[in-house]
Image (cartoon, rainbow, N blue to C red):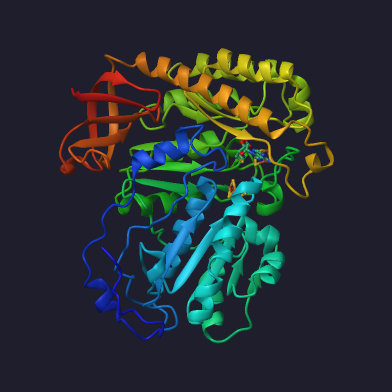
Length: 511
Ligand code: SAH
Ligand code: SF4
Ligand code: F3S
């Protein structure tokens, strides 16, 4: 369904009632596409998550107290680059605009406000946004009422540069002012000088009671820490997101309850090093195992998982808690190794050795035997020799993760590693990327084949995009499962006996 064609730039029309008269939103969440983006290492090595192009067009901008005359009726298209944190932020900003009366459109050509939520983690992610912005210049000249906003990590890091290079951009909002998006947009509509740049380094982001406008009905992201206190030498995140700030347990629980009331069955907790959740609040008052216990008791919430784990911060207590709460807490962790050679790990300042990583994996598997592990790898980091790379391959073989993202090292301005030579040629980076990805695929295939004959509990996400007669969902260890069934299964749990496997997914039939 498309947004009303006649939605003009004038904020007065169409009315909320007109917006609300549209057909109900289809579930635009495509688990297969998500799986490809998230789990296929070699599909687009430069994105660490899928590019969320479209929100289900929701004709109902929440009517009522929060609707704003300068925002209501605006047709918005929001494009998300980068990680799940960005997806969460997009969903919150979309929710916030929704509450103020904006509607969402699938086709960017129909949008009166185009928002890019951006990522700086690799050069390619930034280049794509620069390309998209450049292409909008002519449209902006034709239609000055059409608004362009850039938010997120690139806005925070490159805000002033974007304003100079693309002076036709209207609004630039950094990672710490996203909750002010509505007020900032209003100022633009009131005639503030543009580009309006809002990239103050405020300590925290407060979305208050905003209800996220999610892609998926049954799955939701929930950010529990923002920022990062590590200083991995290659990584830009501490500079785009600032120091780590944890959200209080009570605030997280109340958001979780709102999500459950909204039909959510599974919550994915987000933090750059989620194991350090609560360290800034006092570890006895707030920590990850405690948070998991509290969430376990939230009525109606069926599943919880969390990313990303830092090997040096994972405590035995966490594995025990995961095991004990296994009926709800999914036995799945994303714990990036990044490299297998101690020399490279040292230059990356990751804070652990290969042996320590293996120890952590062994402890996790001992205390929570059902656990599955996913990893990230950077190939071609400064000084990575053939022998160093062979160590990454052998670590992959020893750990046998269920899935991995593999990235080619990309020098980031302002990071400590910028001072190190980027001395691995591009073709070697590419080759190492291919080799590691293929090896991971092989391991995934072998591990998935071991599931044949097992009954998996699947949270059904909906009909498969490629074959509407089949359903797609996720197992407890976050494996993608396809099986035959009607659309009435969407959002429900099914027991599925596994009969087939590929590297990416399992197939089966209802047990
Ligand atoms: N906080 C998470 C992930 C942050 S970024 C963690 O610590 O694991 C996601 C992934 O992008 C990282 O795990 C890393 O593998 C990759 N990455 C980060 N900076 C990179 C760079 N400069 N070049 C290539 N890959 C990078
Ligand atoms: Fe980046 Fe390291 Fe922080 Fe992860 S832990 S966000 S890789 S600095
Ligand atoms: Fe990218 Fe920012 Fe996430 S740099 S990876 S969107 S935290």
